[in-house]
Length: 266
Image (cartoon, rainbow, N blue to C red; front, side, top):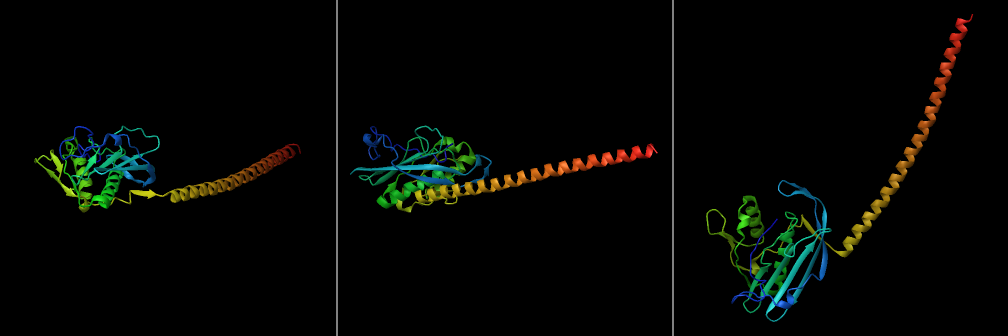
């Protein structure tokens, strides 16, 4: 599901028109080089997207720079998740000659799982990176994908996502099908994300979490062992009581039989 589809030609390496950002061919195969872990907080089940349990994500990024261009490439992966090349990734292209910024890939920002705050997090990271280097540059307006406007709930989610980051969404028709993002100054965009949904987990924090989890497991093992010992003791006591009761019942039956025999043989 597309959390926000921002169509752009920034990633076209050879056929870029005048004034557009052209991606150098040597950067086509750039992959994430620096990694961190994200914690996706457990959230209530959503009617549209289903269950949203606690999950951990590997977030990666890489940078490239030359005199003409700068690139920030971001992506994330979940354990056992298989995605297409254009999924779960975001490129921020800077054209220093034209003092402009574009967002890629051309197919748009496609997030899976969506409604977990990952799209807003990556865009916020990209805005922060761009504001440190080219706050005075312009991020060019682009057309929004029509397919996201076919469903009203999806369109509202997309528009809310973009407006939260400081973009202005406009429509050329009353049906809200032909949407676009207006030009914006990089420095005026919002670089925050929903920290209640996503937290960056540092290496030491992750190690501490693992250590605490291991301690809890050991404590639970001790508790389980004590409980099992108590259960075994209760079972032994129960077996002893059952034997005692059986003996008493047998003795009582014997006594009753003896009394009946005495009474009938006088």
